[in-house]
Amino acid sequence: GGSADDQEETAKALWCFTRCCGRMDTSTAIVEAGGVEALSALLANGSDVGKSYAQQALKELGPLAEYASRLQSENASLKRQLAGDDVVDLCDGDASPPAKKRNALRDAHDEQQSSTLKRVKEEKDAVEGARDRTDA
Image (cartoon, rainbow, N blue to C red; front, side, top):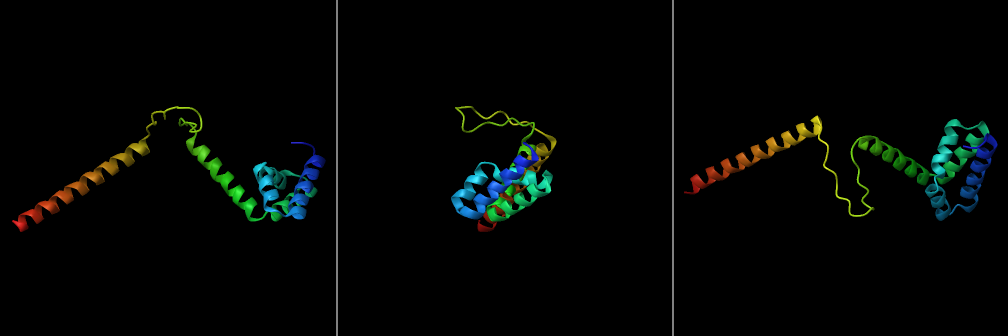
């Protein structure tokens, strides 16, 4: 949000913080405060000046910005995968997990696993039976 001028000034300030301070704790604070998302959004949709400052700040943040961006993408992907499923907040109270919703893919996987397990057990029993007969 904010005007183009505000966005440019914010990106410039973040760039100055990353460039002048150059300390890991400063960079970490910027990442934790959502600076990478804001800079990435500005890089994609900002004015030319804003894009320039955003690009420079992200460059100064370097691998930390790339790592944070990758984590955000993975988080968004996981949220999309979980959409529709009941999710339990493990940090909150004594809530028990909800019953898992079934779907065709899960059912097919479970059936295949059960079939494979049954086959392996039968093969094991056959091998042990043959060994017992040869030992006797």
